[in-house]
Image (tube, rainbow, N blue to C red; front, side, top):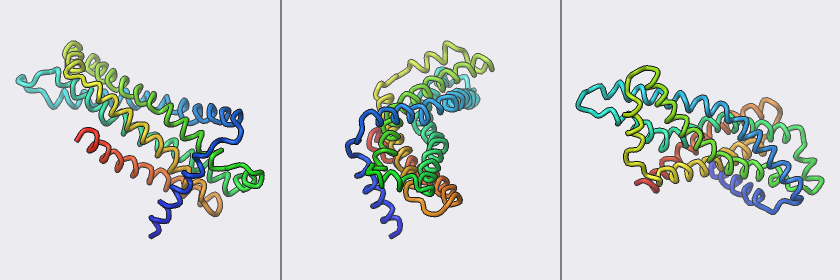
Length: 246
């Protein structure tokens, strides 16, 4: 029953979030700040991890297809499929759930326990709209770009791994990338990233907004936000895969 209560409060929160912003100028200022905090500052870690994940996938695939009867272009094919279908959208989103989700939950939770949110309400400001809506728009608009960068760098990292280790030839890897390329897979990945971005922005915001107590409770809310956001991403990933590819 406690879970049903939280689900109900979550959707009631979203009802307040998606109301028209009261002051457009302030809203745009907050939006660009959120794009920087939630998106641009996450670019470095996404680029670093994606490059090496692609290299690891290519190396492991190359070591698994050492039979002369298996064509080497399958290394590039497998790396491309892995990065576009799963590692690009899902793995990137789980990383962002930990980095960005904890930041959102702790920042909003700190505002709650220090009564800054109460001050906004007293001034007649829709605090949920002011705090959460810019985060949703920033993540939904910017995270598809992060996902595309992750896919590209992952595939490039696989190529670089082959060049550096000599496990496979560059021409075979590129042939595998070109083999049976389906543009729908890119659309599928972007749909997943947008859905995951919405969860990354709203679930931690919920945990932070409704926290009660002091700094210790804010830390616990941040941990719960990361856990439940990751669970929601993995669960939604299963259903989206079944609906879009099944």
